[in-house]
Image 1: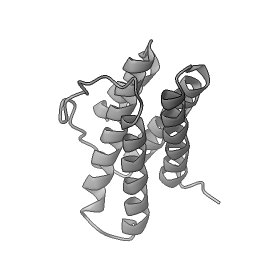
Image 2: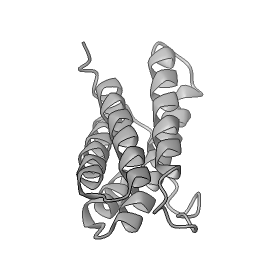
Image 3: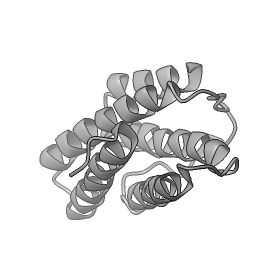
Image 4: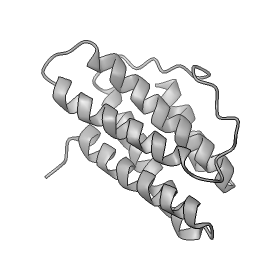
Length: 138
């Protein structure tokens, strides 16, 4: 759970667009890492987890297209996720909601069309991810 808390803190404290984009990229990576850990075990949730993993990867990739994303991203494995229980999905869902909110705010505040489009796309994907992880879809 520490990785979820750290990713959420990084998103909440990001004071500039480049810092927020780096934090968002890292948060999508953390979510993807946690999901893949569950996905590998198979089981009844395999299909839902596969959709969630694809959505998290798409969100990460959307952030990667933002012109203001710093060249040096947070190194993979810097805060390796150690999520092992179904209760962690609550934290992952909350993290995806925070991602959606912060990215939507950034899209609304950005003067750069490329950053705005990347943030809008990533925010949309984070909202979809939240629905998949929270289990409150249509």
